[in-house]
Length: 621
Image (cartoon, rainbow, N blue to C red):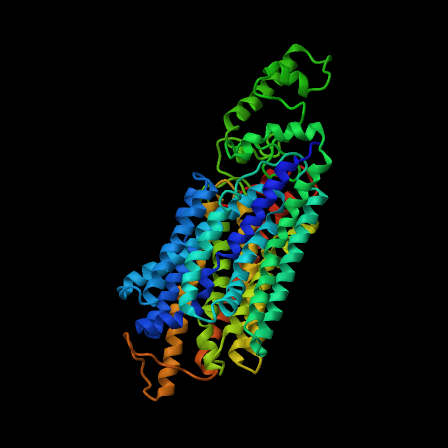
């Protein structure tokens, strides 16, 4: 069996490590709680205006339809450059305003700048997710868990930098958000690129590499959790947080050990066969042709593959040669039977020649698992966005994601007011707890779902339903406002919030394919800002102001700008949490409806049967 060349192995793992660094710098939207007080103070905004900036931030962070549309037309480095430009312009201008280098801008322009700055994350996410999922098509859940997990963990990483290097200066934080993510993307943009897979890509070495990266990620999350509590509870010299930050950087660099090890193997020499394979794939490493990927068949029909062996038919072979090379000795067959065989092979060659420029549409053609014809795509094949939008599976996935992340982002956006209502005036520890738990949820959700679909063909969406069941109890816990519940609730909320992202992404790719995944993924993530607008901007804000009006004795709400009200006590958000618990209950029902609908698809795709039934893959009307 042909194995991947050392150069290809090193290149795709370097790309994954670079993608990790990009994602670790893509969580700028999570830092809103740290610099929003400066916006409010310098620009004299009230809470309503500040909440609207938060909604603009959520829309910018999650609406990436343009990035999704362009991801199949432009290389990843252009998407990364665009995201870097957006972040630099958005946060750079915010820094100029807050530092009073320029005159305050009109409010609507501040909304636009906030949206542009946070929109950089959608370009980062689309570029690295699509590229790395195509480079590691057999480990989608694990890859998504790692990459999306680092987006969640980036808030804790930035918080450590904020404390250790920026001395808690929110103005400098805005400058940091404008410069550092831009520099990281520019340094990584040529490393994140498509790399063709050759031979057996799901070998034990790849699993060991992913286990190593997962271990490093978990160790980093644990390290950040420990130093967060230490810095919160212990007074220390100024240089100690700097040392702790340097150790954090070592954790971020540690995954480079994998490509370094792969390259070091060359010192011991490689076989001529491997050398020839590397030479054949050299143009592909330069990104000249992403469509000539050759892989060994493994699990139908999700993974991109062709029936590529040393004796496989090529375009230059004649139809008669193909018929001869791919059929056993048929001396007993008459000429009519031979003619039928040749006709069948001719049809196969014609389809291969027509589609050879689009490798992702060759879903097990060589095995006969999926027959290409003029029909609508089935589950597991490549959908265009307009084709996915008419499917019930798409909307069920959208609504379940909406119920989970919409209620979760409501807590995150209102964490300052929730802590204040319960008597906590410094919420840094809760922001870090949610960030670290968010990372662990994304990482663990991807790995857990990947394990169970391989072993028992359990649909990934089961774990989304479990996360929403836990969220019901979390919201009820927040509503009780008992001592210590905000600490425990922050951890559980972060875990469940992260699970939703690590489940939604690979599920969407498995149901609707990878070819147009950028558009489909960015359409589904719109659920996050919609949830923010509905649950945080409308329901939570209205109910909070109503309770604050009761506390003030006026009994009536004060509308308009320039009137800030404060509510203290568990009652401030109690009804809001009850509403969100009901929303999560609805999400549980929708999740298990979706799981019931797609269960046969996962059985067909991940059980040992080599050829899934076409009826199992058929999309519901």
